[in-house]
Image (cartoon, rainbow, N blue to C red; front, side, top):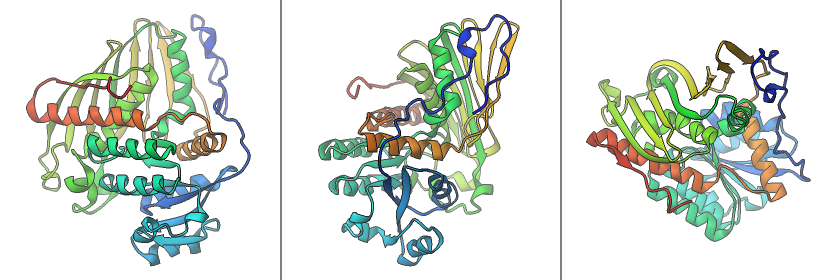
Length: 370
C-alpha cells in the first residue's frame, strides 16, 4: 500500500500512513477450503483470489454435477476433489477440507451451512446470509450449537481504505457523524443475459433483488463505519421492466435510522447505470468513497477548504477477505462480521421490504441479537 497525498494544513495527524492488515497474526498452517457453488463469482473472483494466499487454498469443488465439479479439479492445481451437492451432504471428501465457502443462490445457503456445522467445519457464507431473516437465524443457531465459526462475506469490512476510514471517524476527523448517502446500481441483464436467472426469482433470492443484492452494501458499510445498528427504516420501490415482474425492487430508495441518531439515505437498482458511492457526513467534514462497492474503492476526506485524496494500490477485496477468514480460523481469533452481525442486516432487509410494500416506517428489534 502507498501513502496518501500530503494532507493540507488543518487536517489531523491521523492522516499519516495507515496500517495494512492490522488484524493479521501470521498463524501456522494452511486453511483448506471447499468451494460450494461454482458460478461466475467463484470461478472468476474467488479462485484467483485464494491462489495468491499463503495460509489458504481451495482443495474441494462442490457443484450441481460431477462433470462441473471435476472441471475445476482439472483447471485449478490445488483443487484435488470435485463432488456434487448430494455428496457434500453425505460427508464425501470431508477429510480434504477444513472449512467451507458458500456461494449458491441465497435460499440454499442454510442447508450447506447446516451440513458444514454438522461436520465441524467453519463457515464462510456470502452475503446476504439467506433468503429470509428466519433462515438466517437458523444458520446462526446451527453454527452456535456446533461451536463452529461463521463469517458473513462483507468484503468492504476488510478493504484497507474502509478500515482506515473507520479510524478517521473514530478520531473525529469529520466531527460527529450526522448522515450517510449511498448508491449501488448495475445493469443486471447486461451482466447475465437471462431474465430467468435466480436473482429475479423470489424463491431463490428472497425478499427482492436490488436491496438484497446491492443496497446491502451501503447499509452494511455504514453500519461498520459508524459502529451503529439500525432501529427503523422507510422505503420506496418500483418495478416496471418485464424481467422484474416477480420482484418488487427493480429500483429502490430507502432510509435507515441508526441507534446513534445518524441516518442513511440510499438508492439501489439492478437496472441502471453501474455506479457506486458512499458519503459519511459529519459536523465538520465528510468522507467520500467513489467508486465504493464494485471491487474498486477510492477515498477522500473533505473538511472546510481542505481535501485529501488517499492514493493507494487497489487490493483484491476477495483476497483480503479470505486472508482474514484463514487468519481468524487458524489463530482461533474472534470473527467479525459474524453470523449475528449478518442477522441484524437480514432483519433490516426484511423491514426495508415491508416498508416498501406498506409505505410505513418499520421498526427493527435488534436488541434480541446483540
